[in-house]
Image (tube, rainbow, N blue to C red; front, side, top):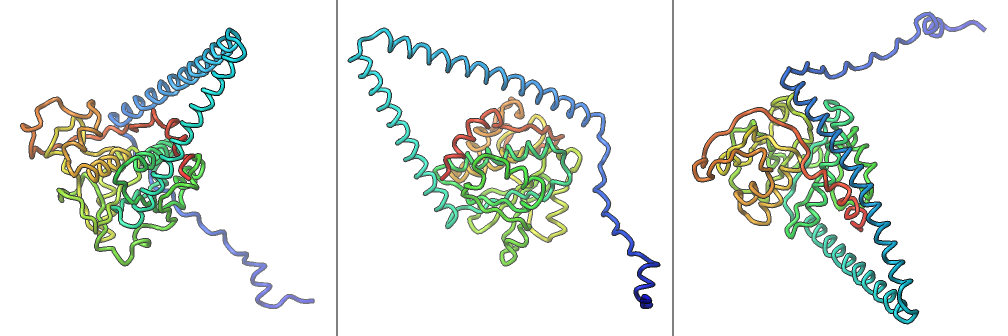
Length: 332
């Protein structure tokens, strides 16, 4: 059977492979940025070493306590031994009941926050601009944010948008993530809040609009991006292109930073949550921002003083990550 004209043409001109979209251009690191990156890598290596040592020390401590317990049981009569065992069981039951009660109260607070809490978004649409280690760091920061929100007496209504990227995949690997009482959207915040676009406010240190009070009607967005030294002004540019409002925290009115007003994701979220509890920026900043990022001058002298400088990216609260995992697993 002879091939038709269309079939013959198709055989002669096979379809061309679709061109792969060009990757996002990687900006070359400056010497200063390279030094900071090297410093960060050394910090991470040292932290991993300390974590391993702490884990080994904890294991030895558990073994020591077990030996002491067994020796105590062996050294007392049978009747006294039974009393000790029953007493220990009672204490363990009491701890479990207390933990269960705290978990129920936490679920109640977070469920209520979904109905009337301050909407706070973490924008996860920057995965393509970060390395694997930076994405992992961001996932740890988000886990810390969720744990802090769960402990708050006045928690916020947290949202994760852009979960369809690599950061979302990394979050899926976290223990208990599927049970988190948090909104997860694969799409952007523009899609999630298309009818409330006028209430979207992107928090960025590049904004000229200082936020003096959190408006319950507004929806505040925090950029989920680690190491913004390579992408300065990217959140501001994104907000301007989308036609949404921007704002920045009034850090310069309460303290002078030793480096920059740009903070890590977990620091910004914790400051917002602390303000929701206290309605006091001064308390919120000084309880969250680490001493090493502040200048040691008097607060009143620094009132209304402008702060500029380069950003130093570090992840606050990650030393407590393992401890937070236990809490997250108990979320439901």
